[in-house]
Image (cartoon, rainbow, N blue to C red; front, side, top):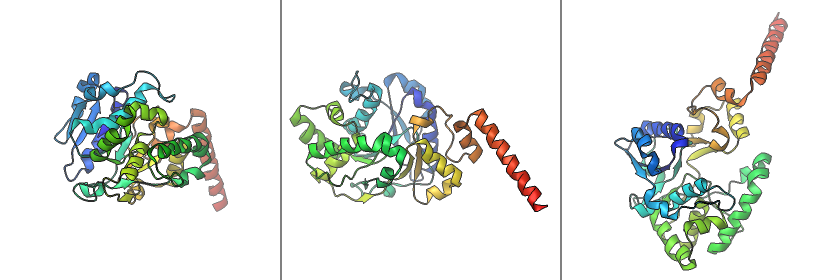
Amino acid sequence: MLKSFSGDFELAKRCIHSFNQFNIEGLNLFLVVPESDVSQFSELAGAKVTIVSEQPIESYFVHESVNGIRPGYINQEIVKLGFWELNLAQNYLCVDSDAEFIRPFTESDFMFDASTPFSVLVQDLELAVEPEYFTQYWRSRSEQLIKIADYVGLDSRVILTCHGHTVFSAKILKDFKDSFLTPRGWSYADALEVAPYEFSWYNMWLQKCQLIDIHPREPWFKVFHHENQHLEYVMRGITLADIARGYLGVVVNSSFAREFDAQPAGASKPATLAPYLSYGELGALAGNKISNSLKRIFRSN
C-alpha cells in the first residue's frame, strides 16, 4: 500500500517503476491518493497497480495540527492505520513515495506463512550513536515511544518498533480499534495526538495483544534518515549491489531530499552529489581535485 499525493507524484512514479521492475511474483500494489488526485495518478495504474481514492477514510481526517504536526502529515498516518477498513488486503506492506525497490522480491520476503506477516521490530540503537540524529530526533522520539508503551501496557525498558515500511495485519489493526481506541472513545487522530508514530502504535499493540505469532526481522529498506547518512554512503562508494545484499530497497528521506530531482537509486556519484553542493563548493572541489592530480604527476616525475 503506497500513500501519495500530487506533490509526490514524481517520487511515486519512481517507486512504482521499481515495484514493477522487481515484482517477480505479481503482487498487487494499492496506490492511495486524494480523490482530487486520482486522475493525475491514473497513468501509473497497471495490471498489478490499482489507484484507490482515500475518500472512504476521510471521515477520520483532521483539519488542524495534531501534536504540532500539520494535518496532511497526520492524515497520511491515518490512511495507513485505516486502510484495512477498505477490505482490500488482510496484510499490507506500507510503502512511502520516497521508497525504491532495488532487487527482486516475492510474498515470502514479507510473510512468514500464508496468513502471518514478518514483523519489523528493532531498537535502532545505531541511530542513538549519531550526534545529528540524536539531537534532532532520538530524545523526543524515545519519550513519545515510552508514552505509547505505557498506554498499551507494555514494559517500556526495551522498545521494539520501526520507523516505517512494515507489514500491517488487518487482524491486529481491527483489534487495536475495537479493544483499545473504541473503549476510550478515541479516533486514530486521538492516538496520534498522544504520540504521532503510527507504526509504533501498531507494533506495540501487536506485542501486547499477541493475536498473531510474532516473527521479528530487521527492516526491508535501508533508510537514510538525514543528509549526512546519505553522503557517507555516496562518498564511501557503497553501491546498490552492496545495499541489495541486505535490503530489498532504499529510502532517501524526502524531508531533506524533496528539493532535489527524483534521482534513481543507482545514479552515479557525481549525479548524486551535485544537488548537495553549491556552485562555489563544486568549483572548490574541482580546484582541489586538479591540484591533487598535479601533485601526483610531479611526484611521479
